[in-house]
Amino acid sequence: MAADDPALADFPARAPGTRRWCFADQLGPHFLDEPHQEVLLVESRAVFRRRRFHRQKAHLLLSALRHRAAELGDQARFLQTTTYAEALDAVDEPLSVCAPTTWPARDFVLARDGVQVLASRGFVTDEQTFRRWATGRGTDGGKRLLMDDFYRAARQHHDVLMEGGEPTGGKYNFDHDNREPPPKDGASPAPEPWIPAEDEIDEQVRADLDRWEADGDVSFVGDDGPRLFPVTRRETLHRLRDFLAHRLAAFGPHEDAMLADEPWLAHSLLSAPMNLGLVDPAEVVQRAEQAYRDEGLPLNSVEGFVRQVMGWRDYIWHLYWHLGRDYRHGNALDAHAEVPAWMAELDTADLDAACLSGVVGDLRSRGWVHHIPRLMVLGNYALQRGIEPLAMTDWMHRTFVDAYDWVMVPNVVGMSQHADGGVLATKPYAAGGAYIDRMSDYCGGCRYDPKKRLGEDACPFTAGYWGFLDRVEDTLSGNRRMAQPLAGLRRLKDREAVVEQEQQRGTDPY
Image (cartoon, rainbow, N blue to C red):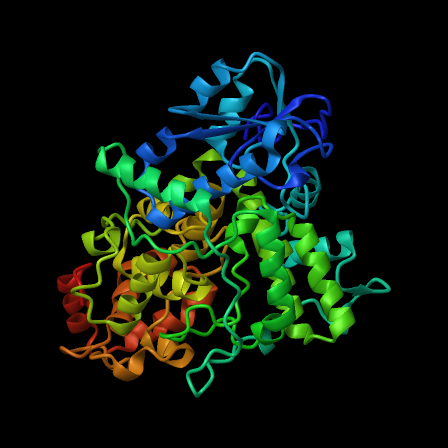
């Protein structure tokens, strides 16, 4: 990155007295310097023309923005325009804005006269602190960039779940306690989450989206449906309290499990409102730690949740900037297949694989599935079938209600598709049907057998795993963590037949 790159700039922290321009992912009070600071909010229709979003994602964004405008009343100037530039041209006063969350948005605000750009907010660890930690890592002779190292440093720096300088419970990570398969009775380990009720603003958003689509201005994918995620700070805090009181205790053990008829399990469902900026993640962490100390919640569940919020979420955000603009174009495994039409349209009509059909159907219905269906079903599928990483990134960005560029570029290019050659993850997250069988209830009624790799009932993930290893064998031959899987590939007596079978299957429905 160049020295004048906006990701390296030391932006000032505050600009009280200015009108604060807040993007639609900066909607909480922590983006203001003072409670009564005047605010500019902009609703740009061009955002929805550029990308074909999930219908429920478009609804969520507009509902959150309009609810914030209504909440602020005369304190906010709310402009509904075609583009951001059109809105800013109508504002004749100095503005300040917290550094936006994407490269294009930062470039845009830095190029505007009369706009003062401030340090970013909405994450537990600030950019300068991460920069100091990361200096010298990832270079020759330096330490690897590892999330676990960052997470430990962040816990120490912010004094979270620490006792006299040592981690609560004697260790930083209780992940080994959080890998249990789903409950044997197929029931969720936690009660149903609290779901917000729609109001008149939601009705108007739905009417506008219907009209825009009928007029041909925009096009959506996925089902419309009742709003499932918070759009105000009040709703977000209600969901957080509900999670802490009724669901967090059960979160840890089964956080990697999947159940066909229980999409929520014990997950917090806070990623969408956090990524809208409705609550400061530092407050989320503080409340979770306080619940542990006051209510005696299981440490493995509390630590696992804290690690998601101030560990992984923060780490992904900082890597988005640290790794630079060109990181998104990584394609170390030379994957060039297109996103198949059934995936692009969220069409399950011809999908016979129960896990794929279930996950894609859930995504169509809700615009959300938790992190394991994303990584080990959708991402695993794309990895095995060689879908182009940037195309997969764009697809996930558009179809998940909690997805943004900063979220998806490191998660998909780095973690899910191993397209960065190992910068983020030491080996690809590829797995056969045995993993899905162990961690879900999908395989019991599926026409495919997770134990078979050849034949009409061969599991596409099991066979696809070996097809994937065959395709990337030369590229990954120097990866020590892949030595055992590649040795297994070389021992396969039916390797040639399996590879030919999977080449014929390609990305067609199965």
